[in-house]
Length: 223
Image 1 (cartoon, rainbow, N blue to C red):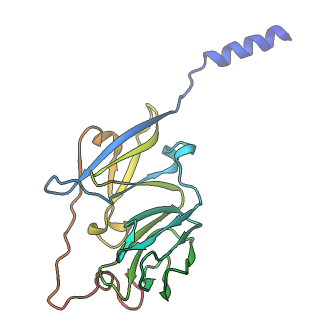
Image 2: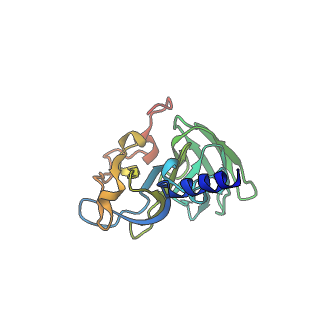
């Protein structure tokens, strides 16, 4: 019996094994002019992401400093909470018309730190009714993990690579459109070592200026 067990162990060891390796991929995203594109979001299915790198339910902070939201772009897993402190010495009014989370935080000062849960995947665009220049975005995922490019247009992805499969990604930037339906699909192996260009459209001022959020959403809360 012992001899049979040793034989079985030996046969198992000789079988081909698919080894999944964790790999780091530096992705550079640029606009049509070749300029680095910060705040682009790269979204990869969790099947290609090692456990240690996957987005997890957590608590995030989006502050309000010098009449701007900071950070401009946030990625979270569905079920996470976001706290909105006000570090300015003036009041702000935070709201969104986005389908995944329409909400309104009426005027509040720096003593308050309202917190909201974000449970549906998609893009939530934030604005302030008092200061039209204030805008920010939250990308919410379910079974995917997302990374954000820095000022140099770069981000480092942690992905699982095998000979048999090649990870794909969706790449999105707010200047491509209001939601992830406008994201660009890419095969990551095809963009290793070279910039990925996104066709973004720069926003132009209207003759009758509206807030940037009003240009993106109508008053009914629909895209």
